[in-house]
Length: 185
Image 1: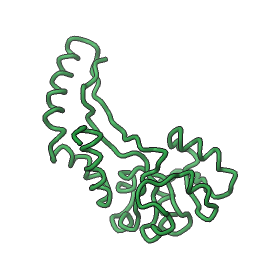
Image 2 (image 1 turned 90 degrees about the horizontal axis):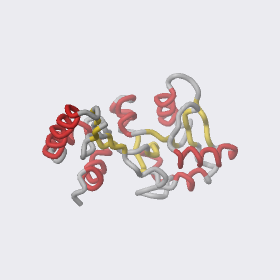
Image 3 (image 1 turned 90 degrees about the vertical axis):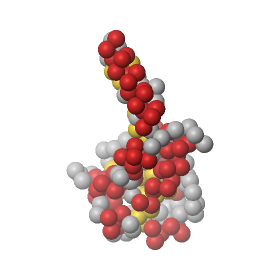
């Protein structure tokens, strides 16, 4: 197929999710090593038994799962259930996409949480547009490229994705949007 020259979406990677009040338990105010957290037996990580979190995180989970400080949730409401467990102090942290947290919880619940980028997963998710590998597909991709070139730097375009993020993550998202998505800094 023919792919767009520019990515059309930019979404943050999974992050460590904690209760805002517990920030002091997590030493770093910036990027945190998940492996360092897994070595702390006093902190309990809650994860889905059915979800893959990416190669780096999955390999760390495999390495530390016998240590007893990882709780695996089973069932149908896995991510939402983990977030509710976090809010009820049944686990100390979990891993999730910020936009999933915003979608699954009530605003007053989201406000009780905060996000820490994980050292092991800093690659954002970017999607490109694809059309069939035909002359028609090439013409469509050329039009899409022109639209993306013009629209991606606008606040309006960025706001399409921002509306799915917790308020606490918008500033970080904007910085990364400029650097990684637009490549302007």
